[in-house]
Length: 502
Image (cartoon, rainbow, N blue to C red; front, side):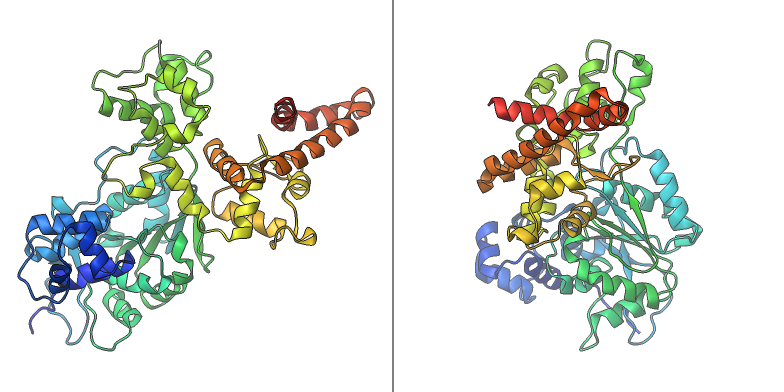
């Protein structure tokens, strides 16, 4: 029986256009092509498109490297797909193929830095049979996708995954209902008649020892039911997810991805030790990519160390800063970090648009919040150095006042789930805070909302009341307890003083 053919160029083009939310006319306008031409390609009324046409369409659709590769593969299938095995297909069964060839490689062009332990742990979890659904969570720019791909590449030749791995880019997908078809396109599974797509996926993957990597799942969380269905029907399938928040499915193993390790003060660390710290390593490597003559030395070590600390150890932020070394040396960058987000722009053009500036990356997650959750987020950005639940409730408002139609604790949980807030491991009363880069974005949103003065006034009132309560206790038996408490709130108290003096 002849081998079923993979999706055609017209089918892939149409699916990517619908995922992008564009009409044929809008796509044609962006690509500089005629509407008739786009329609003819989707309807298979033309022969194989010219490479220049494929490039124009891919640019107009703002495709990720993964989806660009899928479009090229469909345009020139002889270069793109090879069956996983040579055994004849079962009659009527969908055929699963994998893409091969260097032009379609999804391995990033730069080395993964500072994640050796994380890759080892992740490979042990996925390859050891202890986790069939593993979700990497963390804020935008922390390196979830890079870590996932590094682990997938490491496991590709293992006995556990004889069918390799297949990455599926979900960032352009806004409708959970489109996730199944996006997976099918990535796996070159051709839709067949009226058979439900989920059933086709089950058939194609049921006997496969495959690692499926679902990247950027946060905006299609209801499609978690499809993930659960795939795992239930495909016993040898393992799924690795990257997301700002977990999927909340049974058996899910969540691994929070933390920022890179940061150096101590350069005054207390020898240069050789500073050079081995993950955040510094990344900065130096990316700076060397931008300026061949750039090196870490005694003259710039202190500035680079402080720069990495100011950027929270976020890989994306560090890479964006390092790309500027031809214009701004590290010492000059530090003086401009009072406003981080305007500096951290100009990422590589082959990155998705949302990762070409840090602001876009944070906005990607912020836009997943409801309006009341967005209000809670921007109000909490007033806190410097974190805050207790009591302080948050006093400043943010509550459903009781009619200001927010969201419970503060439930809202906090949502913000933590989306990695927009963190709960540091501290003894005693829980505290919540933001990375400095995320807080700056929140303050921008607060200013745009017109709530700045009111929120700062609440913030000041709470901490002035705290200071008055502490004053008589600073000379009594509770002195140590109060000094510790005031030490925790040092940044907030200093922020209040600065605001009242403005």
